[in-house]
Image (cartoon, rainbow, N blue to C red; front, side):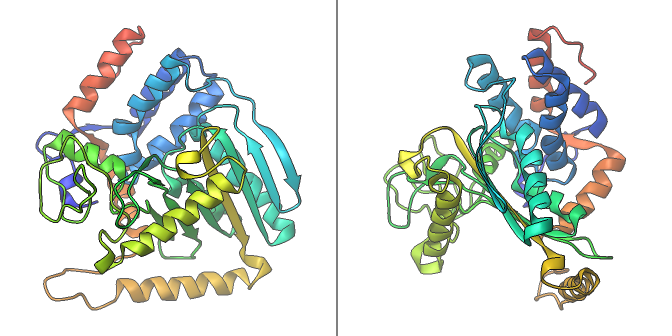
Length: 357
C-alpha cells in the first residue's frame, strides 16, 4: 500500500493476529453464526490484515458485516445450493450468506473439478461480500493450480466520460504457484483505487491523488484534494488519455462473469446480491508442474533483480510486498488505528462480549 493508506507507527496499536481472530469470531457468533461459519468468515479478514491488505481487513469490513447481520440483510446460517452442475462448471445459490464464509468451499470445488477436467469454474449468486479476491486465488496454490477469483464490487464507478455509477469496483485476483520465490498473487479492483481505501484516507485525514475520483458532476479530479462528500470512483487508468477505457472494459468483463453469467443482471440491473467467480487451471493439464514452477521462479527472480529506475530503490511483483508484510505482522502484530480498536470495544460492549483488546 501507498504510505498515505498506512496507520502511522507512532499511533498504531499492534494486535496479534490470533487475538483479532478471536474478536472477529466472537462477534460473528454473537450475531447468530455457528462457530464453524464464524471461523470461515474470519479467515479472509485475518488473511487480508496479516498480508497488509488493510482495505479489506477488519478495520473497514466488520462495520458493514455487523450492520448487515443486525439489519437482517445477511443470513447468518445460509445453506448453499448447486443450481447448475456440469463437470467443469457449477453455479451456486448462496442463500444470502456472507461470501466470506462461502468462497473457500467454492474455490476448493473449482480445484477439485479441475483435477479431472484441466480447468473448472464455479460461480455464486445471492451471496454477500467476500473480502479480498487474493485469498481465494491463493487457495489454488496448494493444489498446484493457477487460481482466479473475481467479485461484483459496489456500484461506485463511473464509465469513461460518464457521470453515473454504472460499474462495480469489481476486483480481480490471480495467483500462480512457484517453488522457491514468494508466489505471484495479484489482487486489484478495476477502479482507479480500491473504494475501501478512500475510507482509510478519511480515517487518516489524508488526501486523494489526481485521477482517482470524479467531482459530483463526473469530471475527473486531477488535483490532490481532501475526500469530498460527493464523488464517484474513476476506472483503472483515471482518464481516457491515460487508459481508463482499459479499466472500464475490464470492469465490464468482471461484471459479466460475476453477475450476467449466473443470470442475475449486470450493473444497475443487478439482482440477487453479490456474484462471485472462481476458476482453477490445473497446471499438470498443460505442463510438467516442476517445469512450470522453475519457470515461474526464474521469471519472478528476474523481476526482483530488475535495475530500478532513477530515484527508486527496488522492483517488486504482486505478492512480494504482501509476503514481507506477513512476516512482519505475524511476528509483531497487525497495526490498527486507535479508532478501530475503539470501535471494536464499543461493539463488543453492546454485544456483551469480553474484549481482549
